[in-house]
Image (cartoon, rainbow, N blue to C red; front, side, top):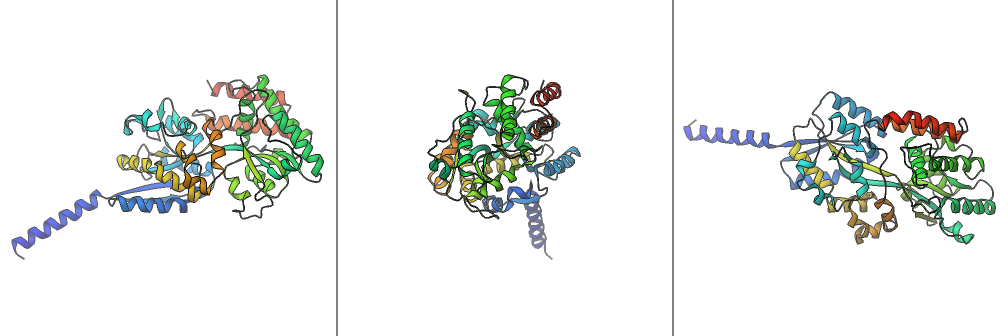
Length: 412
């Protein structure tokens, strides 16, 4: 072998080694419920545009709680295996306070200018102690679903107050008879029940810092009295989010609370048959008296592992996933509620999801649940107390008193 051949071989090996070293594999974690099949084509295109980057999806956990348990185990060990992960919007403070999620402000330049085009609710939910710990992936909120055909039949408007909802639902029940529910909500000890209570509290002018206030008593009392008056099912303390969806879809509910995912099911994109296709309307939640409507911010967000060895590359991918084009594709192909304001008037989005236009005022004003590292315990206290009151095993006053006692030290 001559000297030229040796040098050529050496240079080729050095180049190959340098190229291999420059290649980056980003491991992205999400749950199966987040529909990885929707994200895969987006990641594929990103890899084509960025030849040095390979994206590997890791899935696990069928619920938010199961995914959180896995991430907690991995990150508590300061493991750098995962680069980016999806977390429920209620997890921001926990991950930020623990040092598991990397603050993003320093990577984004002028953060305020960059975030102006985003909905405020998802940004507030992604912020803890003045720092942005995640980029919103898609948002959600709870809405009032109602039977358009039944309101038309009885010549009734969409209720703007909870008092009007009671009167409207009572009239429909009387006319329909049988097993028709007037009002369906979640009362099982789950996260949806936390949101139902907070929405009752907020729409009465109250705040979670005082759950013994007249607003809190009015709100929880409304849920309890709805069961007592048979406006809502006797088993409401056992109803979970998807129970509400299936009962409405079966044609047995006049009005009910649920998240945006329910819409596609009601229109026939569902494993179960729907009896309400074409007869469903969606609106902002009612309020008590002259108070403003309010709803909970839901959805998921992208966080970056504080122990990742590929932070620069990870931030670039996060920005791509939150871009207008990707958000548009997720809305069109996956019916995800986008986190960018402009997409709620985007023709391509509205052609496929015309109801997004009416949802925009609702998601624009959505409010985050308490942002605190103690949120898992806060949630447990609220949902258990509310469920007990709805079940009748505690009075409204006792449930709220216990809630105030237990929440006080956690929300300081």
